[in-house]
Length: 405
Image (tube, rainbow, N blue to C red; front, side, top):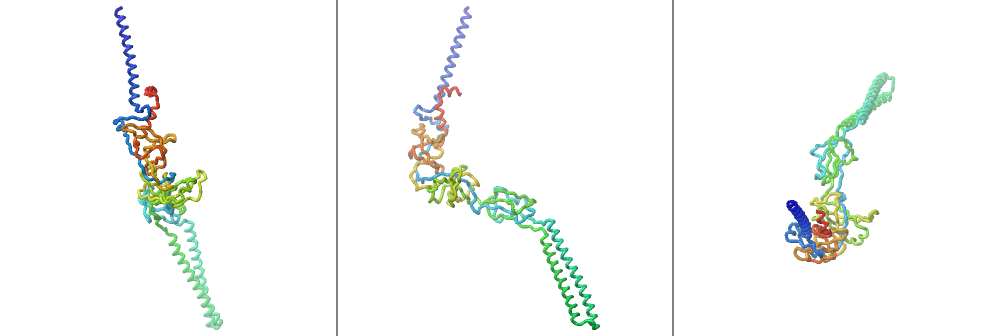
């Protein structure tokens, strides 16, 4: 009996201990959630110096600069007029080219660089025609010789008759004239055949002509293999001069009055955001795209660093007025969600507050802030997305967060 009581007491104690341990674990989980949630009731985010370092949070002061108002529009990289050239064979034939001589797509070529040779070979039908004409000319020579022989015999007979007094002198002279005429015809026929045969020999021989690069630039397409049959209507290579390219910007027709006096634009590519190219106005299109109601506006850009590539997507910023004092922040400082832009302002060391702003155009890696921020205020320039995630996490109830763990 005493043993059963002792066992019962032990089981009850163990159960109480297990319950207390489970409750303690739940309290510990809540404390962990509360400790990790650094968002205060007023919405500000409080981080310790260690948390700032761990999350690599960096700040910079909003700057004030003279920035011209403008519009930002999308565009594409195109070859300039006269900066693209196809390479064609001068006549049909067989291509003669060393594999090491044929350039590859992306390689650079010089103007006049030898790319290969095309070898012209006359078809059998043309060679048969040449032979038939030669035989015809030879037949004419044979006939002319027969006429010479016949006229010579007539002359010999006329001389005998004249010496015998049977014919007058005039008839003898006629026979002599006929001989000279027949000989002249024979000589002419022989000369014509000799000239034709010489030309036919030269024409029927294989003729090679060099194929050279018409311009200097980058090879963008190649359809050139040694030994292939080529046609003068088919392009063998396409070369583009990429040192200067055209940027075709799609400007909404409603913005045309604003850019009427523009002469330049700032061009940037998302693939290389730190590089800004200066474009010089070439032409404003005369037609409107009926689909998106935009007008093509072309700018010429020097591409010495080869950072721009054909058909690359770019963004162009065209000034629409004189420079004005404007607040700017790094583009990485602006967080955009559902059409709302915001920045995280450091109100005191380690304390950050989300602030909604009105963002304007991009400006050389920065974004213009039209309202909501003053010059000199510190904003998070690196790590804004991490703070935004922390803000969103604070909207989840602590119990739900603990259950997810």
